[in-house]
Amino acid sequence: MLIGAHVSQAGGLDRAVARGVELGADSIQIFNQSPRMWRPTNYGDDDFAAFREAREASRIGPVLIHAVYLINCASEDPEIRAKSLTSLTHSLRVGDGIGATGVVLHAGSAKRGQVDGAIERAGAVIAEALAQSDRCALHLENTAGAGGTLGRSFDELAALIEAAGGQARLGLCLDSCHLLASGYDIRIVDGLDSTLAECERTVGLERLHSLHVNDSTTPLGSNRDRHAPLGDGEIGAKGLAVFLSDKRFDELPCVLETGRDDGRVTAADVALAKRLRRRGLRTRGAASG
Image (cartoon, rainbow, N blue to C red):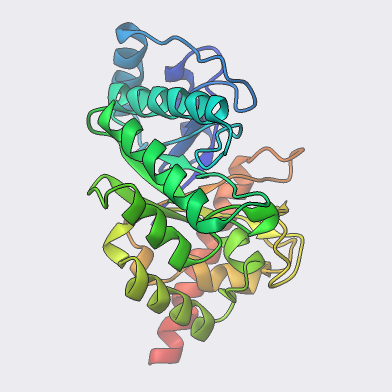
């Protein structure tokens, strides 16, 4: 598992690589622009080249881009869908430029409308954004299920992929906090096994391309998206050790998004995640032996 962190790109894309190295990260995630504004940051070829050069000289492996929070590909408002398409396309093109592993997307929300129609609208926007970009993959993130958000179940994620044409560039990013909040008990081996079996049946584990590891301030099935620092929430250190040590996650980028320093991830948070993974591997080894 390539454990890493969300880092700032302030001051230039290449600065994100140095920040990841300082944290002891093996992978990083960035925003390609302010996550709460529509206006994109206009990067050029020199910016992309500087990022690729810095990354090649570092320990950093996979790089994820998180699309902005304003995006709602499922909106009934044509103007919001148009803005979402423009923003998502820009994220994917930045991903093309820096050689990112994928863009992570919250697909949108049905709000009070019908889910089937929302999925069809989101699928159309996603398909068009992929058509307007070249190579970068798109990872649909599972959601906690609040406010009609799409992707609270593997059935919804599979339906989104199908509505977007089932393209090979489409994959999943699973968030541990969101899984727990949407009713998947990933704190215990049997619960995680059941969760991944459902993923395999409905979507296919071959589409699982990235992970977010976050603890949750709210309990199993709460449908509330409230991150907590690792070990301080409802998943807890023991549950996170189970999640982080599953061999089916080997070689995947696993990004911490919430830390103890006013929410920012520190080197201590990354080191803790790596210790929890080692603890989980030892426990699983002892149980199998």
